[in-house]
Amino acid sequence: MGQEILQIEANHPHTFFYTRKEDLDITDENAVSDYVGKNDIEVIINAAAYTAVDKAESEEKLAFLVNHKGPQNLAKAAKQNNAFLVHISTDYVFDGKEQLLITKIILPSLWEFTVVVKGQEKKLF
Image 1 (cartoon, rainbow, N blue to C red):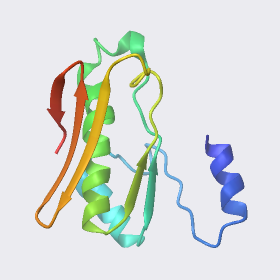
Image 2 (cartoon, one colour):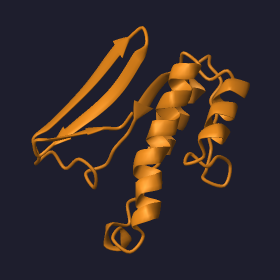
Image 3 (cartoon, rainbow, N blue to C red):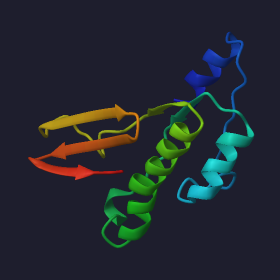
Image 4 (cartoon, rainbow, N blue to C red):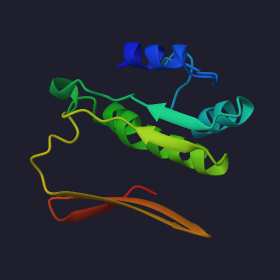
């Protein structure tokens, strides 16, 4: 996917920032907020994910941080900086077989992202 984004960048007038986990820890809310604000980012494309399915149970905390807390931090930073967030997921997270409803509600004082999987609602923030 990164190669595709590089091709888009070649013909696009905007500045692109690429980060690796060594450059930006998306599980650190302050680091994400500072990075997005400092660089005046307008669009965030998140492709980060914990995908080691076979290790997810033994590394449950890490999987939660990367797949839940990280996107939550990016969404908060996007909201604070009036940026747009695109979150790319793999079939490890959403395989298309489950009944899934994603809603986004934007009100003057409320911003929610709720995922409903198998009839159970999970409010992310």
